[in-house]
Every structure is written in structure tokens, then in C-alpha cells.
Image 1 (cartoon, rainbow, N blue to C red):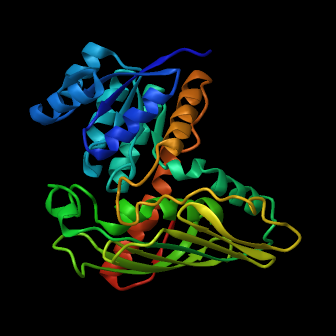
Image 2 (cartoon, one colour):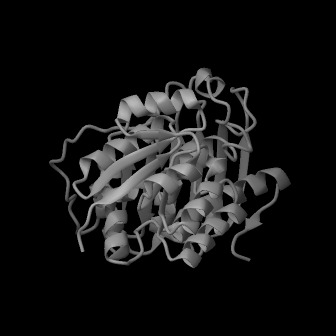
Length: 343
């Protein structure tokens, strides 16, 4: 079944533009409405996107009857519109993190399951061709036993990035800062390659920005498969460097930098992208320095899941994995103790 699905967007922050562009790029998706809590922003969005604008998402869903809502509100406001959508039989594609704590995230998952609607979480980097090549190599055992995985998100944000927002860097709106907002994408990829974490010891600090959440964080991981790992995340490291993912196995190593394979040393397995010279894009210093290519791929996967009644690649459960680890890092930092996960 290949029908055009009606989409509506809740939230008019900068990421909503990426969502709108992805919807417009797909022949089987149609953006029909957008909602903002601010009448002024709603009017601006109406002019920009050329669709009906609302200030009440319940009214929007009742009048427009979309098939899918994209939730682009602040991170701590994802639950309520999800419950409203699920109650109306509307599928939900939520920005990351799924929510700011596991209890709220699980309520989203349970509501969508009960209503038999799809729930997806935006982790578009899983759809990168470079990452898929790495994932295939790891899954096929090309690197042998995994030894260590490292995620580095050494980014930078000017002070006005936080000052011009009423929620970024706040515990209620953001759930934290550098790890749960910026670092979560690379942490998600790390977990997708290495599997579940057994224990974590972490520390987070607020060192340069006037925010509640952390702008510097680090953690040591012990994976269930016996591998070790580290995470370093920041929004304080001027001028900001492309995120990096390192994978070390007994038969070789691979590194991704800015989403592209930068190092490939795998025994008996030549680099499949040796001639690749695609430019690297990263949100290291500019949160909008990203293309919508990978969002388009994730939206298409979500549409396919609806049309073929299957789970999207990044469903609600997948969306909580990185969140669970980040919350454990916060817990470890607060208690100054090693934290066991899933126990």
C-alpha cells in the first residue's frame, strides 16, 4: 500500500524546518499543518511553510486529522502531545531525546502501543551510508571481538545559544545539556554498535555557560559483551570539533569523524570508501550545519513502517537506549559511584 500520508508538526523551533524540508522532499508525505504555543511564531510558520497554523495541538489534530505528527517541542514537552496523538489514532515521530526521563518516555511507548500507532524517535545518523557500512562490518564480525568504543562530541555553543532560549540547558526543558541534547546522537550510534552497557562511571560539570545542565561530561563504560568504552561530551570546547566515533576490535579499527569514515584498518577487509571525498557536515559549532538527507531517509523508513505495519528502525524502545545511559551518567556524577544498568 503506497498512499500519501498527512503530516503535522508540533513546535516551531529551528529543527522544525528540517522536518518540513524532509516532508516536502518525499512524494508520499504532505505537510498540512503546524502548531506553536506562540501566536506570533505560529503566524510566521504559516507564512514560511504555507500551511494552516495553530496554537493548540488538540484543535489542530481534531480539525486537520493528520496521519502523523512530528514533535519538535522542547525535550521535556514530548509526552503530552504524544498522548493526545495516540488517543486519536495518530502516529508519532518525536525529536530526540524521546523525553527527559525514562518514566515519561515509557508512558509515550505504552500509549502508542495501546493505541496501535507507530512511535519513532529521530536518530537520523543511523541512516548514514557510512554508518551502515560500519554497522555491517561489526555485525558480520569483521573486527572480531570488540575491545573498546569511544564517542567524542567536543562541540561549542556561544552563550547566546542558551541565553536566547527559555529551555535549552534547563533541567525541566532539556533534561540536562551537552550529553542529552548534543551528545545523544553519537552515543546512540555507539550503543547501536556495541550493545548494552553493564556499568558506567561518569562525571558532568557546568564549567563555562550560565545553565543548569552540564557543558562538560565524561564517562567510562563497561559493555555487556566485555568491551570497554569512553564518552566525552561538551558544548564548551572552542571552536567546536566534528564528533568522532572510534571502534576497536581484535582484528582492526574504524573511526567515523563528522559522520564519515576517516580511518579504516581492518585485517583482510579493504576500505569500501577509499575513493570517497564527500564533504563532512557537523553541528560542532553551528546546530543547523546539517543537511536534511538523513532526515529524509528516516522519514521514509517511518512512512514504510506505517504502510507495511512494521516497526520503524528507531522505534520508542530504541529511542530510550541512549537516554537510559545518559541518565545513568548523571546519576553516577551525582552519587560519585559506579552505576549498574538494567539491574
